Length: 277
Image 1 (tube, rainbow, N blue to C red):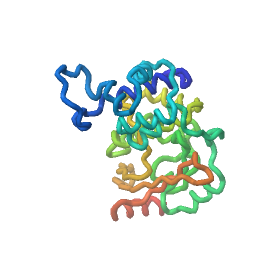
Image 2: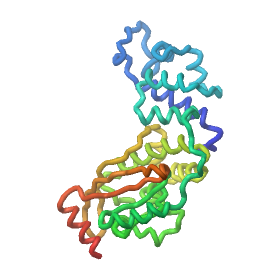
Image 3: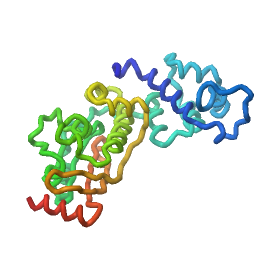
Image 4: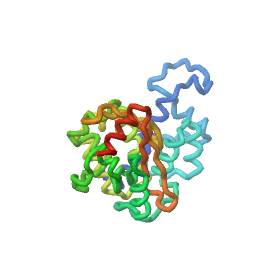
């Protein structure tokens, strides 16, 4: 992990190359070639033809020669490479073609949102920023996950806790999926917030300290996951399955409101017992 300013062009180059190499030429109806393909995926010439861009331009992009593609080029390449919506947004961020909010990343909870978190009881709820810093929480979330009040602010980060906090190493039943989804979110956030040094430092620490994170980060998956299911091993209440929903307040789009709901009756009973404490 190098400094953010220095490696944007390099990351764009690697991202384009990996997206190109994952594609199957047969899915595009491309004619068979006599010469065997030395690398997987589409050739640069094929991507150039699909996108209506010169081969030389794609070569220069993939060789990180400092080009800044226009929004039209980014859109054409996104279609040619069949990028997902999250990958497309990531590409636009790397190319610095998506409008940015000049405001600094949120480090404290907006008061109306902090009050809303409390009002959502007995549903476990918390408020995070784009880098997964936990800004506010209610008692139910504390009893389900960890006592955030007892942690220093530097450790109140959902990814850091999952990876590096000993009490949560085995907390999630499907830990790899949870980490994979978290990494994919952080990669999107990393491209969208190029000047956020705290986010860059967090990613660097996770890469250095956790082999699983480093491996998943290198895969360059990009996804913003707003809802899903998690299964947890609570030390007192046993296995608890929850559905989670992530909401973005219109007034504070950099803050993420996360709400958990029990996924089955046994989990609801377990959450009720925790809430009654």
